[in-house]
Length: 94
Length: 540
Image (cartoon, rainbow over all chains, first blue to last red; front, top):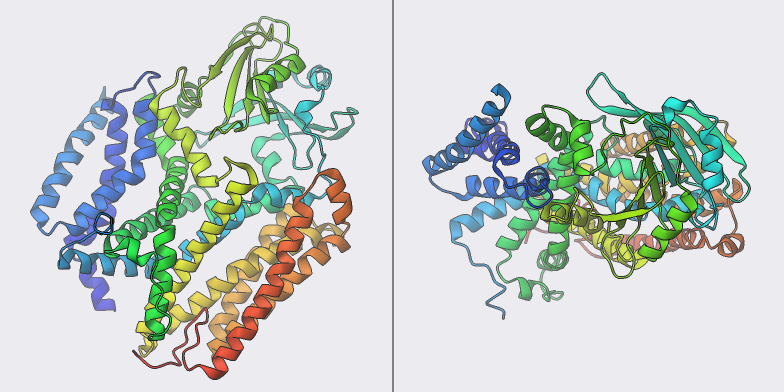
């Protein structure tokens, strides 16, 4: 049991599905506040990312869990994470 | 048709999803069970409040003239507390008026502070008048303590904020994983929904029962998990984090923007509109009496009134109307969020009715409650299957004990806190501290008992007896501690009192019959289907 736990902790997929996947979902949700259209009431960019957070997380989680090629997972994480992180950082620095 | 409802995945993916479905439940399933069973009870929070309070005013304060009392007390409170005035119904069915201002807290949140007055609308008799914060007002109210605690144990598991919300949010995601993986691994959904093989081996029957209940409950589990995670995560970190990114950390401005309620800066005196006329107009428009009203800037120029009415006329969501706070003139019907209708406002306004099941009165609540109890059954049968397959591995005995402790412990703790609610006043205590204390004490007692008992079948039977006794004791205790009788309750239109008393008595009878069945099966059958399969049968 303990060796299984240790091997899981050293497994990249564990981190991608768990903490990193959750963090990515949070980053995408926050980033959406800056690029998602505000809609007629100019609130959709705030409200819809909050509503869609569970779906965002589930999508990221199942992709990271089921995709056999780790490189592809890292690429998708980078594609989603880097632009959203850059947008959030730019918002704070400006 | 059958083919359309079947999902065929490659073997590797199916195997991975089966492992995910099982392990996610094993690691967090007991806590998930705690959240779901408390949620199944919390669906009836309003009925529990009426049952526990007993003497609830039969008429809503919003269908009686209340303007003169609001006006009279506004003249007696600190003028700083007239920044906002809210009107709501108290736990005992009377009018709550809260004259308050908004105070910045050190942690960045906003607290409402002011004069809280509870009065009988018909006579103007003041039941209580306190200068306090909204949080204290909510947490230290005795009358609604039981219903409030049941809701809070479901939403936050009695843990401090934001950790309780974070945990229930994570459990919501676990339920989402279980629902999605369950959907994908059960290849033939339509077939699974109608398959129950009783005559073959018992393990197969158990698997069929689990799949049957799970298949029917899948859409509901998905909806509950999705909306529950939304509520937990939005409250725990979503709203503050969004405010940080989009509003430079100013949560109040973000909330006011979302609910379209700007701060009234004006200090110029102005007339206060007649609230009775405003409420009568809102009642006519909604077709039902309002449940909440808010006056931003009482007695100043540019004052604004918002009136909230519950769902009615086949609508899924409630309605909000905006009025001029000086003239009382109707301005517009407000969407749930923002100035004009939007996709975001519609999505958010659907979350509450879909999660609470309160869109069609008691009928939809009964359906939601029943489906939530069915979900508990799926969790328990899932564990039973998992344990059955590992009955010869001694390392899993901790899970068997945990299943017993949680399976019986949460209902016993909920029943105990209801008993404490009725007993606390006659023992000189207060309900708002006795209710959580008795829940924790009962839960710890059951945990300790489960940890120290060797014979798990005997423990299962004894815990069932405790549950039966508590169910039977509750209506009697309620009556003996001054609770309202069935006839008086019916006369007052409080159906919750006889209904819930009857539910507890029926539960006691049903569980007693179940217990007899379990004992008989344990004596005759080598593989009893009890809450905790303790491994007396043969490995299939």
